[in-house]
Image (cartoon, rainbow, N blue to C red):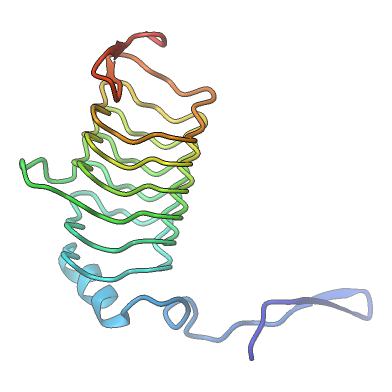
Length: 177
């Protein structure tokens, strides 16, 4: 079993490398789907569970009905997602989405259960009927976002920036304008 451990040898830190192909061999995602996604920017119905996608430019990516549970998408740019009136049920459960850019994204019915959405840009995003149960949204920007019908039990809303935000009950929150 290969591990990531730091060891002190003669006063120096030596880090055991996972392997030369990491992160493509780690996690439960389908490497073939990952390669297809990298060239087409389309990942409909694909499984990218635990995929390392942090820092990537994925503007316009299509994740319709994809499973990205546990994926690391921190600092990824996912803005300008297709805004068609279709139902997106993308699974971002347990995903690390810190500082990701979802501005203007169609995330209708997406699952963000237990996701880390700290400082994420969700301005203008359609999160109608999305599941945000136990999501950490501390410092997120939700200006102009639609949360109507979203399930938000246990979500952390500290320091969230609301302005013209449609809340789950249909009211508009202008507290941060």
